Length: 589
Image 1 (tube, one colour):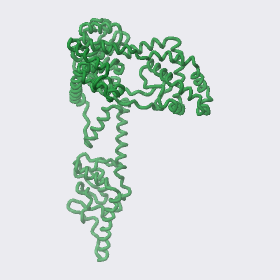
Image 2 (cartoon, rainbow, N blue to C red):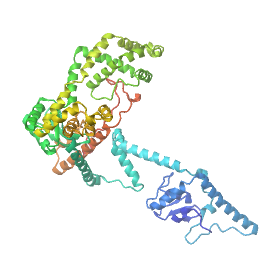
Image 3 (tube, rainbow, N blue to C red):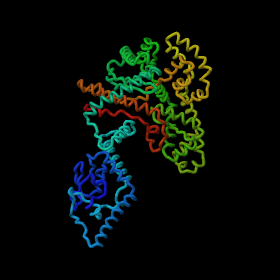
Image 4 (cartoon, rainbow, N blue to C red):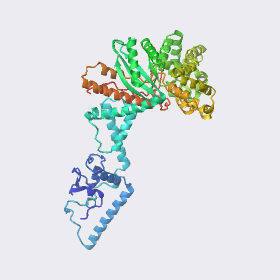
């Protein structure tokens, strides 16, 4: 008997013709079903109860996958051709009075062409799954196993938006079938060291950036309200941020000289020539420590966190009776508008797509920002609730709708709203502070002389500062980028301007999960455990900062109605915040 022409027979042996039982030449697994099922085994594709071959060479696997990907039409033509040859042989034998070959006979290796002998037992071409069907099945199986991993290990679903998650999946897919995941021991030791090297490489790149843009030391504080106090030091510049370390300051939180020494040690570690600013909260103990720091190092600024100061100011303002009333009324209006998708869509028509709410920052700040947006859209909202489309809708007949309309037509509400929102004006005197800051940083007389010479060029916008690109860039570019691009004719002023305008005024974006640091400082650990836990905290915090910086430059997504929680005190869009986990992964290090 002639061996079948199917290429798969080069990689398997028929060991039981009656049952179409075959054996793989690579893993020696035996199963029934003939060459048809063997293809999926060798191609490493799950199909019903077929187990993918783990020993098949990659070139063989790819070749068989190519066979399976052949369009149905071509496969049908091949099958018809084979059947035509078989029929021709049978007719020839019958015509000559000859007999058919013995179906029980076999070649030396037990290899027979089952496609000729048992065509009735093989699935038809129409029953064979297409490559797209197989791929969809593999995709569904991978999705299910990913979901099982997330749910079983209680991993926050927001981790699926992490760049590290996506990079991990892509890297595993690049390895192909046969990738072996690292064991816990390898993750804990080998790969921890590799990731530390990766993080330190990022640190080196950012330290090089500090030479041009300077950097700001961020000092974030935490207290349990009792005896425990912690401070976390990180460094940031326009290209990224790095985590330095956390310090247990329990028992020293009110000692200004101790805090000064702590701040000074971090400044010296980073480098005096690189540090432009040290940013802390506005508490009196840190304010005095910051003053001591500036007295000793004339080129360094201490600044309170602007967000912290504004939040405290707005919190105190919201306690005033008339302000609390207008905020409550504004809450009623926005919650009603965002309570139904039809009302939201109509509101967006009248506001030209502008929203009344923004991603949640802090409740107190969000309240005043929303109040400001209401004031800006005052006339549009009045027009909306007096428009025919609204008046003829069922919403206008409801008590809540009528209440909101009456509030929007109440001049007392708008008068109070305008007055409360006016606290968000920008003080023009801040421009003078820019010049004062440059003079403070320019400690050498030669630099001050050059700045004095160059300043009129900047004030009069002469030379490169007068070009169309420079003028358009005033509102389109970040201040530091604008100076880097157009200030080359006044280099001394450019250098100090870039360093000043590249610094943040707030550390609010960097909100640490303090439970990680609690585990590090307040657990009873031996030296080996403490070192390993310190490494884990160091790596995780730095990777988290890198993701925050990368997401900082993403465009804000439009508000999605289904993500608005109207049960909150103020409706707000779900914010993206990849939080370092609750500390459970720090256990059993």
